[in-house]
Image 1 (cartoon, rainbow, N blue to C red):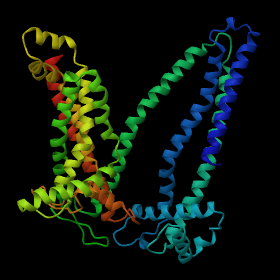
Image 2: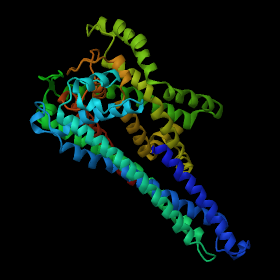
Image 3: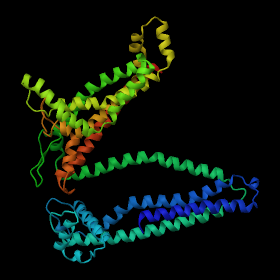
Amino acid sequence: MSLGLLSIILLVLAVAGYVLGRRKAVSQVEGDIRKLHSLPPFYGRITALLTAVPAFFLIAAWLLAQPLFLENKAISLINPAELPAGKSAQLVMADVRRVAAGLNMLAARGEDVTPLLASPSALKTALNGAGVVLETEPTPSTLAATAALRDAGKTSRLAMTIAALVLAVAGLAFGLSRINPEYRARNATEQFAMWLLIGSSLVAVLTTVGIVASLLFESIHFFQLYPISDFLFSATWTPKFGGGSSLGILPLLWGTLYVSAIALVVAVPIGLMSAIYLAEYASKATRAWVKPAIEILAGIPTIVYGLFALVTVGPLLRDYFAQPLGLGNSSSSVMTAGLVMGIMVIPFVSSLSDDIINAVPQSLRDGSLGLGATPSETIKQVVVPAALPGIVGAVLLAASRAIGETMIVVMGAGAAAQLSLNPFEAMTTVTVKIVSQLTGDTEFASPETLVAFALGLTLFCLTLALNIVALVIVRKYREQYE
């Protein structure tokens, strides 16, 4: 049974639980709902919640834990003697998963995949025709692991369906058995809803943990194949699929920081001054059209900014600055990407800073003006310092947005990984190389592919450091103005 059909059945059972729960509560008091502790809908709601929520929670937990158990069984079938050079059993599981996914795709089309498991060459041809490209023929142990993975997956899916349906029916029966005139259905419903809200609030935390864990585990695989010292301290980035790569992060990290710094130099002054003007000087009529006009910049797709950098800004900087000054003759440069990226993140600084400045109590302004300060002095000495924690948050958001940008860098700064102080030379960033290393028919078994996860982990640590610095600044100034 498919997951969609199972979900529909559970929802139907929940609706049935609502109707039956409400009907039972009313029937027990012979229609006089004044004898019930709670209104009839609450009896239906708690029954529906007890029917659906535990079953859906079981499905979610099952789907999260299922790959771990199934792949451990499949790994045990892989013959160490058949492992390619430089590959571990865990890395070969990437091939097993791809083959299993391809076979499931063929089976969904109505094709008989059983004969393919007995013929590696026929399997490779069939999968290549289905869009699942295999560079080499699967080994016998890989085919055995694939068959075991598919069989265990079917068994697990059937067991999950049965368990979810049994749990839903049990929840329905339990909910109905508790209904009586004295049952505090409203209290139970509200408490159940509170636990649902708590669970929902944990989704963000668990998502962060999952992201970090996935990056960390794959990065560990990468560092098992490539020395961490060469990754962190080498100044050469020359990936070569097949071996002989030099995967130093320093030029990528330098390009990321260089482009982001130029973007912030452009965005922070313009955005902050725009926010001060809109909050303190602009009339309501002017603010009504200037602020939306600035915020339109945030809605423009990044590919459009990339085209703008490629067609307009790059040639302009090359013809009027780089070539006359003898600093380069390429339209792709750090300055091109930084300027365009700075324009893109202006709304992040402007809109958030404007909201923070407007949130500063008017009493602070009135007190400053009453002491004889001018409006400009009030803004400089009172308003901006009081709003500084929020402004730092806005700048941090803009910095994170700049660090994570890809398309503008691809089209505006090029893809050259190098260490240089010349802003009119082509460079690249960490995000661009993450995309390039994962583009095309790649397998998660080589350092050239797994390096993308190490780059992602480095980027995560960089943004985490920015958050820590911002938190220190916010706490320092908040103590002075609260």
